[in-house]
Length: 58
Ligand SMILES: [Zn+2]
Image (cartoon, rainbow, N blue to C red; front, top):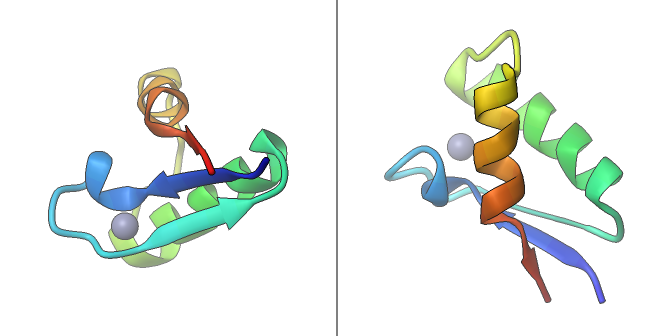
């Protein structure tokens, strides 16, 4: 099992998909993407919660 997150579930229109073996790795990818692509410097608890609820097992 791996974890996948479609950024479009959080930021409509974004075609980025993060994929990792663990939720920790996935969060790192998502944080890096959020910063570089969306200018989100700080992942607030609210954003982190959205990310967690959008994670899918693949
Ligand atoms: Zn995105």
